[in-house]
Image 1 (cartoon, one colour):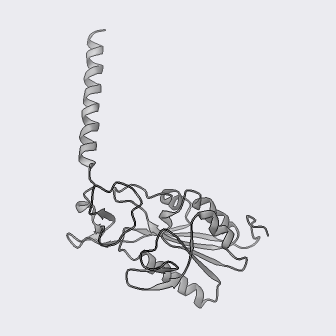
Image 2: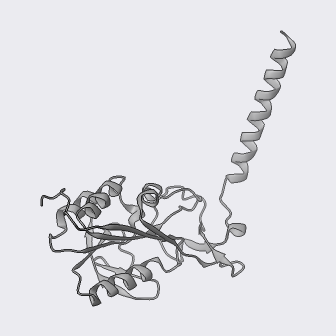
Length: 216
């Protein structure tokens, strides 16, 4: 079997655990990895090198659970580092990877490997984060978990960025920069202005069309 070959008779799978920050995504990934290890399956864990908030070579949950991981700079590097004997590949903070990550995990699954990924499904604007939309589409199973809204205590599915001036999608941080929010309290900066501009342009176009119709 080559690097991109398929292992006959063995079925791999793609699992995605997603949700906002502080929802326990990494904790769930670690739980699944531990169960695989109890079953004596060879596991490799990868993380994006950009995520060094807690540790450079460990995945660490907000509840302080941790496991050794291999930091990589690109999705292709995961393919290059997976051993033939590996049965489970876990990838944390998968939203930080490039768009090729969906191709990489598909190839791993075709090799008979169980791929477990955890990541943010939405950015601070409520939009799909990086490659997450593609990964959710090809996944065999998706578990979307919730945090607790810091405003009202309801289930939170959004990540709120405290500083609206930081507009870049990738901005690594913790409670100093982010909060979990429910839909009612997810104040996406500029959303109201964008909607007003849309309806204003729509009305202008309608009025223009009516004027042209009258002149015919």
